[in-house]
Length: 308
Image 1 (spheres, one colour):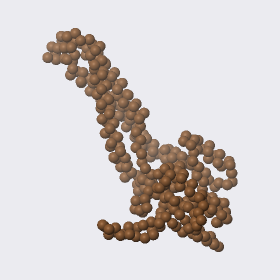
Image 2 (cartoon, helix red, strand yellow):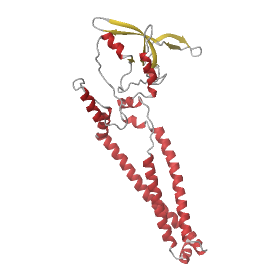
Image 3 (tube, one colour):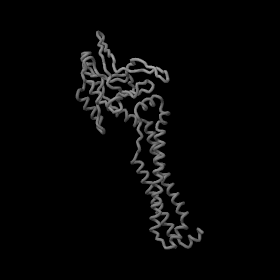
Image 4 (cartoon, helix red, strand yellow):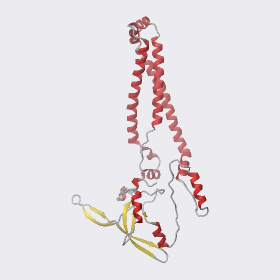
C-alpha cells in the first residue's frame, strides 16, 4: 500500500529505509510539512515567499518527563507544501493531514512500552481477506481489539442500495444501447439497400454475380461500422475524460474531499466495448446479407421499370 506518489522526493521504500539510519545529533523522520525558517521577498511581485527548513525539533511528552530530539526531514508524504493545495497521503487513513513517521523502536525506548495502536497488512491482489483476518486473529486471539479490512467497506458500498441503483441504471443503459443499436442498424441497412435496388438490378442485367455483390455490400457495411466505432469511441473517451469529475457535484462535499485526495484514473472497459462493437458488426452483417439477398432475388425487369 506504499504507492510511489505517496512521497514527494523519493520512493516510499527508500525514504522509509532512511529512518533506521543513525545520526550523531538526531534522527530521520518523514512528515507532511516543513517548518518555515525565514521569508524572502520576490523581486518582481514583492510578495513574501516562505523558505522551508529540513530540520525539526521533536518533543515527546509523558506525565513525568519529556524528550526533545533534533530531527532531519528526509521526505514528505504530501503533494505540496502550500496548505491551500496540499494533499497528504497516509495508507489506511484518509482524514489525517499533519503527521510524522519515525523509527518505532526508538519511540518504544523513549516511552518504555511496546504498545502499538494499529497494524497495517498489505495483501496480495486477489487474496481472501476474510481468511487473512481470521489468521491474524488466531495468531494472538486476545491481543487485538478488532481486525478490519478495507475490502469490507468496499463490499458494504457495493451492496448498498445507492450502488445497486447505479449499477442497475448502468446495466439498463447497456441493454438499451444494444437494442437501439440493433434496430437502428437493421433500419439503416434496409433503407440503404432499398435505395440501391436499381443499381443492383442494372449490375445483374450486365451479368454481375449475386455473390460478388453480397460480398461487396458486406465489406462496405463492415468498413463503415468500424470507422463509426473508432470515431464514436474517440469522442466518448474524450468526453469521459473531460467530465469524469462532474458526478462529484451531486455526491456532497465530504465525498468529494475523499475522492479528490487520490488520483482518479479513467478505465476503458475494453471487453464491454469489444462485445458491443462485435454485436453491432454481427447484426449489421446479418441484416445486410438478408436484405441484399432478398433484393437480388427480385425480377430484374420489374425492378428496373419500377425504380425508373
